[in-house]
Structures are given as C-alpha cells and as structure tokens.
Image 1 (tube, rainbow, N blue to C red):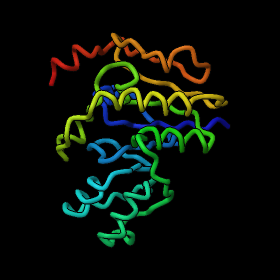
Image 2: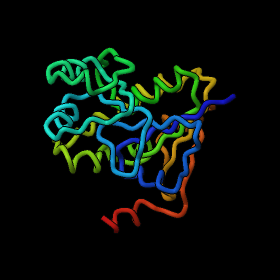
Image 3: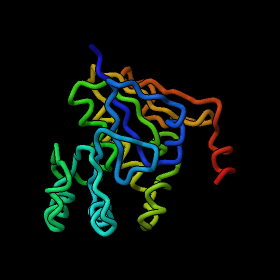
Length: 200
C-alpha cells in the first residue's frame, strides 16, 4: 500500500492546503508552530525559538515531535521531555530548513509527499508569515534561497517516491524542481499569489 504524507510548511501558499481533506491513513507533518485548524500527527522543529515559545506559553501539543539536536537541547533546558513526545532527533545540518528535514524524513520512511507552503520553490519569498507573526525574526538573507536549492536538489535525486509541490496558479517553478521525475508540480488555478497578497 502506498503511504502518503502531507508536509505543511510556513510559506504563504500553505493556505492552499485549506481545500484538502486529509484521509485517515495520511500522515500530516507540520513545521514549527502550528496554526489553529491544522491537526498534525507530527511536528518538526529545528530551532530553539519555537520550543521557548511553547514553554513560555504553556503550549504542549500532543503530536509526536521530530527535532534537531539544537531543539532537543532546548527541550532538555526547559525540562519539557515529560510533556513533549520526541520520536526522532536529527543531526544539525548547516543551511537545512525545517521543511527540508521534514520532507527528507518522510521520503526516507517510504512516503510519497505532498508539499504545501514551500514558496521558495517558485517565488522570491523566503518568509514564514504564520510563524513570524508569533515569533518575530530577522528578514532572511536572499543567499539562503540558492543554498536551500542545493539541498533540495540532492534530496530529490534518485528517489522512487513521488513528491507533489503545490503552488499558486500564477507561479513559475524554479529550475531545481523542473525536469525531475520525482516531482509533480501542482498549480492551483483558483488562487494566485496576487489574490493572496490582496487579502493580507
């Protein structure tokens, strides 16, 4: 039986997921702090700030956690391991973002993966509006885009799994996700980036 995972990222196009009705056997993986209405099976966290926010606000999700060594140290620091169920701990990798870790883990576990809210794949947006409203962060430098792209290219090479990247209807995919047999690009014609921006 084919296993399916949905990785819910933090980019603007994450709103496209709102039209999806998850099936009981699908794995839902959220990144960082999860918005109301999204009920993930797993939450992936690689930075210390989301862990500190959960501690300071007494928020302890019941989902399993996939975390980096850096996040694990923060969980230990705040003595949260009796409240947070850690299922996987990753080595820290320079210039990996949370989404790269989460998608890699799903692929390694044999899942076909749907990616939502990964706007750096098809735009210049490196922002995470949902999370940035809760935890203000410095604007991300543009050079991150090319470094992330290098990691994504390596991640998608020689995979038997399939990956669907969901994007706004008027998006133009970047070169590192085109012409790859692993990847299927899904344009949602009912919502463009311009119409999304107009609502904000």
